[in-house]
Length: 210
Ligand code: SF4
Ligand code: SF4
Image (tube, rainbow, N blue to C red; front, side, top):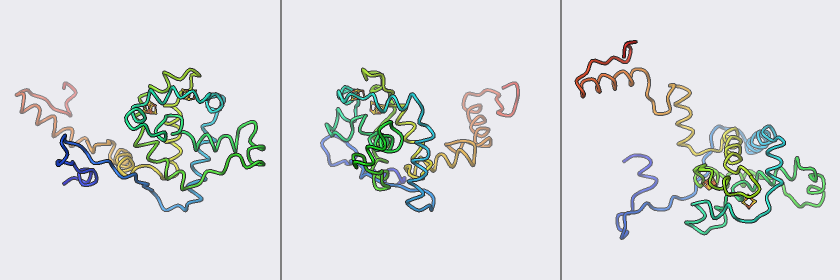
C-alpha cells in the first residue's frame, strides 16, 4: 500500500466510493527552533512586500465575492476556506509591522504578533485548500490578486520549513536528481527504448537525430 493510500484510505463502505476527509497536518522540515521559523516566515513576507502587495493588503472591502468563487468554500460553507481568510495571518503581520498605521496597531494591541501555532494552522489553508486557480483574483472588484499572494505566503512557509512533507520530498528530489518525479537521464533513456520497442521504431534518447 502506498504512503498516500495509507494516509487517505478509500472508504468503500460509503454508498458512493469516497475518500475519507484528511486530518489536517502540520508538517515541519529542518531542525530550527520555533522562533527561527517565525523569523524566516516574516522576513520573507517583508522581502516580498512592495507597493502592489501593500495595496492589495489595504484594498479589501470585505465584500465576500471571492468566497463564492472558491470551490473549497462553496463545497464546505466553512468561512476558514474563504480566499481572503487564507491570507489573514500575513495581513495581520503586514498591518502590525509595515502598514502606515503599524505603530497604532501595536500600541493599541489591535493586531497581535503572528505565532508559530498560527503558521502551523495555516499550512492546511495555504497548501491543502487552494489550487491557485485564480478564480478569486478574477472576481475581486478591488483587483486583489489573491492567488499570487497565496503563492508569496507559500514561499514564506517554505523558507520557514513549514510545507507538506510530500511537497518537500518532491522539491528535494528535483534538486538532487534534476527531476521531481525521479526521471533521470537513465530513466528517460530506458523509457525511450521501451517506447521504440513498443511502436517498432528506431529511437535513441542520446541520438541527436531523435
Ligand atoms: S472579493 Fe476582494 S474585496 Fe471582496 S472580500 Fe474578497 S479580497 Fe476582499
Ligand atoms: S486561487 Fe485558491 S483561494 Fe482562490 S478561488 Fe482558487 S482555490 Fe480558492
